Length: 255
Image (cartoon, rainbow, N blue to C red):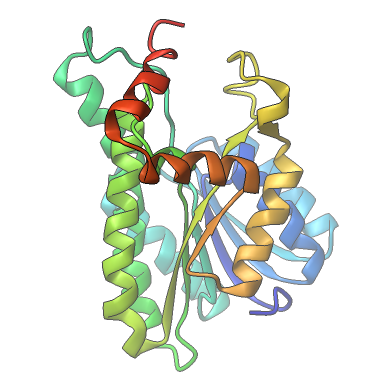
């Protein structure tokens, strides 16, 4: 899909990847609805979008509240008439030791990564079913969803759950011309993780990640994994004995 003169909804857009994608799209004369919890940061992003030549609608809301999420979709449609592209971009993966975790520590991460996606996905489907051109629903997933990483088990599980749901939704929604995309970045440097000690050679900037996400939306690739060297590293264990994979990953569990 050409990324010009489109109506686009981006969740988690007050900072990080969501903000970077919104600003990149703002140069294409689009109409962009952005949402997140932090109203002041969201307003700043909206101001920049408008300075770059696109129209902006900033809607503060909590994605964990399904009524608020549905309300965001409704407001975007009331303002712009339709939604051509939605990027569901809410997620977090703080380190967590399974040996010390309480049940709610694990379940809360599932809520943040999986429930927030579902809360937007369902009302978006109902809207796009009414549109002759259908639309695109994309999820910012993670390469971590392909492999259980030490101290990231709850995050890997949540992202894997999102992938499996979207794989099924893609099949069922094809009849409505709703295209479902799963976009899986590797390590992106954000304010939240810039001091996490990830080797520089394994990271990418927000602008680099945004460029990949725009390519994924433009090409409508069903599953877009990047960067290539980490994609290969994550896929390789599928072809190795499980014991070999566990030996390699166990080196990180005590770091």
